[in-house]
Length: 524
Image 1 (cartoon, one colour):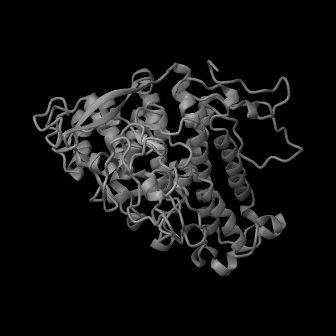
Image 2 (cartoon, rainbow, N blue to C red):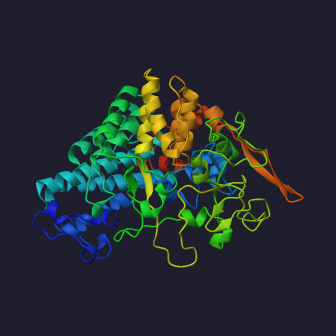
Image 3 (cartoon, helix red, strand yellow):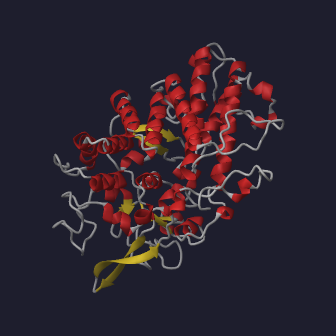
């Protein structure tokens, strides 16, 4: 299931010895001359692998802070983490927010460019070279999309720079940056296969390239373009919704029929792991002061009741049991007071053994459940790491629905919203009743915590109300054995429109000589 990326199979190499674990166990790549690497199929395979390993996923952020913590979705329980500086507006270019992403992006882009430049030297068939070219173009676009979503326009580098080149590359225009990413994705889609054998799951496909193109076009508000690409993925990609929303993210369901692209973890060859389960479970399970990312009451309030009405409109809402009769995606995504989790009934009243008051505190009264592995081994050798789903059919349905709403076709949009609601066990939206607000709510709960909310908010222009919101928590009290739940203010977030993009880290600007320093983002 996870052997995938490092193999350039005999089918591609056509006569060159195929890679295997032993062939790849050759020590660090820097022990080999550049010319030798490109003549050795096993070493070429390792270079390809490095390009996948360098993908930045939300699971790679675990233990620090995840994107949910700088939107209304979540709040970091650790006051010293940079997300709290963002939430209060106390950061500048010198703070170095996302400096590591900038550095990692250009390291990975250089790796992609290096592979592309050496394609003629590789002992592969033309078909093998074309597939690798498609993979590298896809990955280069993916790395640049990550950078673009954080900082906006970036220095465009499409070759390996040497010391004799001008290294003071300015930031490209937004139009040129978008064109580069679209060109890379278009070429990748033309070169890559629609699918792979299960043994090579995780490699970039034609539909991964088209799906990322759809996301990019949507964020550029090219609704017709994004809709056209989304429909191609829906109609021709062969994907379908996984029947169970919660277990879709479990390791036993890695690479399931809904997944268009994910980052593979704990593969037989890469061995990459993440800290998600260690840092987002209660200290009761982990044995140390864990628990970083906590869902907010704001997010809880987004989940409808099982009758399709909001909690403050539904007769099914009981303030004494506020979590009963909710959208099943709520129970699949958030640990709340009374949740059964890993054979424990979670008591989240402040001061309990699951929610201690002095350390590893669920600061909002909630813990993350989505993505977590209920079979994770906390005290021992764990090899069962779940993949990070980076693009799935559910998002493509939502992208298509948003485009259709913007294009004036609400009934077409409603069809795909209802497919998601039916999968979740929620009532469908009747004809003529899909509104923009109901779409936004549906996208919010379906893609909860998956890392796209900041992009959505930027596209919608709702930073002031969604990010600069008053963040709420739940206060749990008990009298004579009866619990009560009260929504309380936790934090008033700061917002300025300059925050739609982060400042270019000062540490990066300082690398340029005087007179050639790239311009900073507006307002910073």
